[in-house]
Length: 286
Length: 286
Image 1 (cartoon, rainbow over the protein chains, first blue to last red):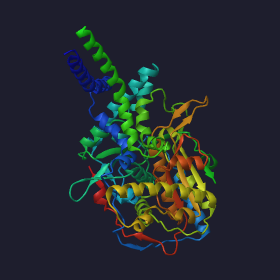
Image 2: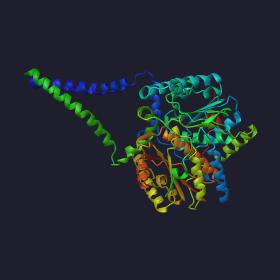
Image 3: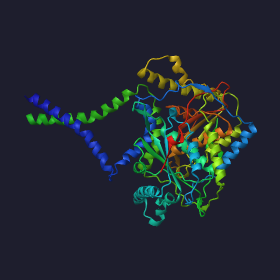
Image 4: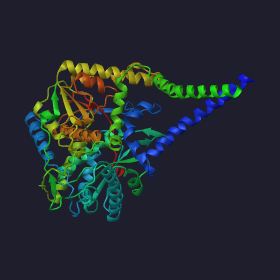
């Protein structure tokens, strides 16, 4: 009788602790997030999907290129002198690119926007999944709604940080979260990465390295814009992905990676007088 | 006496479960990783650093541009017709780019390599941190050591998967992990992202969005290579980052993002007959 009671008590205790210990942990986690912003978690997931998927999601398999016919590669080769000249001129063109935050409201030709996005779409991607969607926003009302969503989040970001770090002139800080270019730029390009796709049978198809692939496409897009004589500034609106996704009616497997306001510079446009690192600071030869 | 024993047993059980439950979990985790590859964890960390840093590392603050002088932005504007022509030609040039796995051992002019890396270095980066290191490997011995590291890991990746999914012709699979181009290509460019930098006083300085920034730089690098008439294939050798980093003597805050073998295509080079998505499949207008 004595030992039976002890065993019973022991079993009950083990069960109670087993059940409540993890529950207790998840409670602690919740307490750290003061505000109810259900999509924040979802947004943060964005950054962790590519390498971990490769490791964990072993049910999936990248599309094999083995079934695709291989054809001879046709190549344009330039004489060495011309290679040197072309590469020098390309560098000089791109070295004039600056992030411009003062964008005129003048319209830009849509043919050019189509061409720069077609250029971005030539980027390589993991297993040729082409995991990108470029949403081109020209409608003034939608642009303004985008501005409202981003400025609200930016204000939260700045105010939170300010509270922790220093108390300073609010007006000075305000210039950091007021994004006038979201209204004035004739075109906003929102670049979404598709974190997975679908097979013919509707099953999830992993998009390996989707963030890297879409960022490469954005690099080509920036080069194409500069080549066409348009300006932009590379922005990654923190925590704004899901509300912007919902505003634009994009599906849940598409996550916002970048937002580029595109246009001509306004007449009074200025840029910070920053320098770039020299070649020997970024390149090592072995 | 009865209740005292019961209480004692209860306390002991609670303690035992409390102590061993987490231990048990970490054991389970270890069992899933059969081999001792201490750097695998480190490598996987690479993918999670950028957005989480912004949220979690609130001790740090991106470099402010407020102290930098602002200067007028000088801009080259083309007539609309020329914009259309330039953007069309740029698209056509890049649309000829293909991932080429058959690279000749012919040397390429280093002046061109310098120029394409200078072009990549014009990419924008979070808070202008320029968090990239381009390691250009020409030395045949180092190239061969790189090949050995990568082929060993690739073999593990393929064999592991094969065991789980199917048993098939080993020779056919072998073409997937044998990377001859790592020996034959005259130049390998290994692109490292600096996940943090250092302040003047030696403190860690967060590099916000370093992976996105460096991937953008790689996009520009790919465009620059295509513009110069050189070919490459975009590779992201899984789990090879740390051993390659150590081989090349790069510091721990630099993580391998990409490896590009660069050269001219070999005469018998083929490419899979893949098509790209049409504009209306990648672009949405609002």
